[in-house]
Amino acid sequence: MEKFDKEVLSKEVLRKKMMTERKKMDFEEVQKRSEKIVKDFLSLFEEMKFFLLYFSFDNEVQTFYLAEQLLKENKEVYAPKLVGNDLKVGKVSDLSLLEKNRYQIFEPVDYFERSNFDVVVVPGVAFDKKCNRLGFGVGYYDRFLPKVKCENIVGFAYEFQVVDELVTEYFDIPMDIVITEKNIYRRN
Image 1: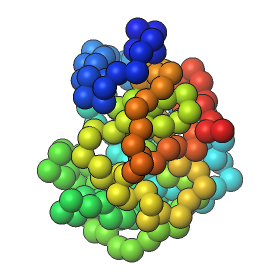
Image 2: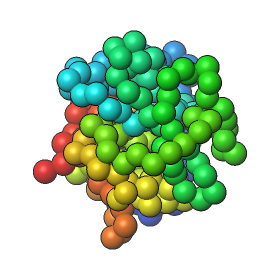
Image 3: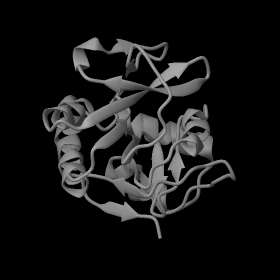
Image 4: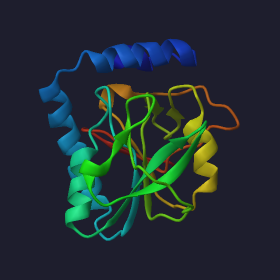
């Protein structure tokens, strides 16, 4: 929404505003916008083979359909697994075998060492037009992404979650691309 773009807000204030706005969305709106984002994503990365993606919760851009599509196309799908205070990687071969972690987010049951992917899809509370990301404030992805070898780090967001500029810190990892239902932003 335009009102968020007019100023650089503190991370805490922006996080709260975006979470509130996202929670207002109804199921149909989430599905409609997510389908457009997933469609654009699939057209951009159809030639890729190894995907690491988050499993959505709490009105985030829906990724279960994306995982299902990738599996149908015989792509390799992986997802983060929370182990202690770190993210590890687990392979996803069947969506019915996922379990919920302490945040009620679906994840693989097992994990192993893998760091090389064609595409990594990352959730976020907000992004800016330069593809910087504001997460939930715990730092899981900021600690995890430097360990990953990937040239296509993609953020999924609704258009209202994209602001002109975010306050960034040295440990913040920018996305290569942010896809919304209305635009595709690329880092320069």
